[in-house]
Structures are given as C-alpha cells and as structure tokens.
Length: 57
Image (cartoon, rainbow, N blue to C red; front, side, top):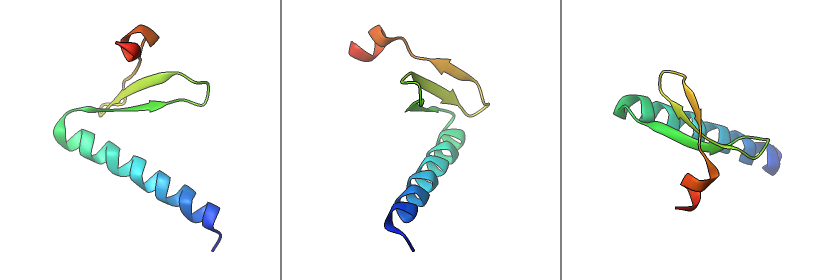
C-alpha cells in the first residue's frame, strides 16, 4: 500500500478513537476545520466554534 494512504487511514482512525473516548468520558474533541476555524465537537454532535481570543489565552 501507499504510505500516504496508510497515514491518512491512521489519522482517520485516531480521530474516530478520540470521538469514542470523548463520548465515554462525557467530554469533547477539538480540531481545526478546513477553513481554519477551531471547534469543539461534543459527543451529542453539537459543534461550537472557539473564539481566537480563547485560544491565545
């Protein structure tokens, strides 16, 4: 297999695992969207944008 394909698969699996852990612990995951915004995604599917000032403090 292609290394790039393998890396992409590993990244996806890591994100899926983070979502499962967040659901099990009643927390959220944080990630950067393709348009450059940071968001919190809760286990219930709610997505909340993080303000830039909150990131820097």
